[in-house]
Image (cartoon, rainbow, N blue to C red):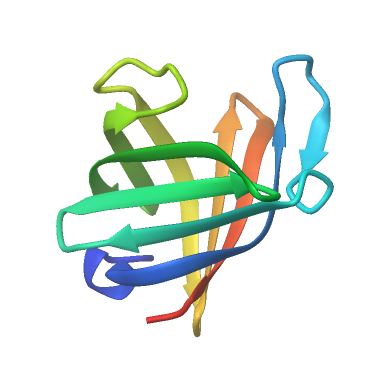
Length: 117
């Protein structure tokens, strides 16, 4: 199980995919998505680029509970209300962090992050 101490640091997105608003699976490599996430003992912040263009950013607090990594947004650029939460199944293996988000029994997002600091 992942703990807050293990995840503190700087992470770079290696790969991922998500289900878009039309229900289509989108591979991050297909849209040239790059992202960095910085995590302190209590907060996270990320910025994502789609190729050379800004795509999204967000910041907020987080917690771990029952094997889940839970982000609670405070500010973001993609239209979510403050306080929106995102719950991920989470696992760290060496310098790689794996997160999967589900709606019911359908995986709607999967990310692989690599520790850079």
